[in-house]
Image (cartoon, rainbow, N blue to C red; front, side):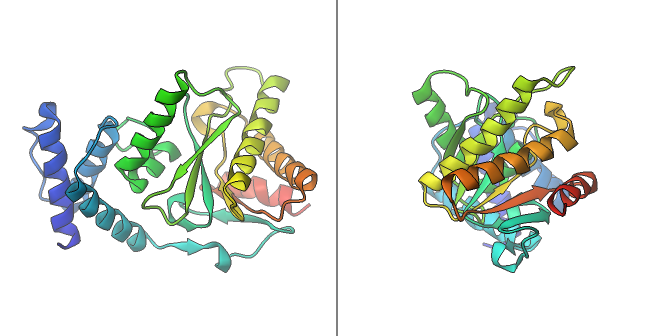
Length: 258
């Protein structure tokens, strides 16, 4: 199969799996097909899937990521010590672990084609990731507390693991409790990565954006928490601060180059 054939196979499989969508017309336009496939993956609940589907999905996603272009940590230059700053799509970064800013349900974003990092990571990892997360949550039996972390395989992403953490939601005034919980998220992710023997980890900007944490304060806490954990543990962990927008890039540059 080529990419077009794989995409159509996946779309048709997902449409047949979900009775409410069986009458949806498949568009001819390539970009519209991509949006439909992503939407169907986003709304799909965690459930078993055939080996044939997984084989085609995995080939499709790996080719799609390769087409976007993969960045290897080995090709990056540290900004300070073994701390890195990289602007780009975290789903294309090859390192040991990347961090996902999850919600308390921990099974990903169900909004079709939403541009949050949770949606992007689950989309390009594949449907297996939601099933893994759902199994962890079923075993736990309650929503994920803020400031903790869980680690799963990364499946089709270039990294080895995804570390899921729920950062604090800031509504109104920023409090010390918010700050302490955000620092706890960073430390929990680092500990989870170390427990798996990871030598590198990439952090997204946890709790900023829709979670409302002020960007400047969040970045300062992130760098301080990472450096503090590394000193306390004497860990040689390479840490990448991943940003997407120019504002975050400027903030981290100012902090890391002081």
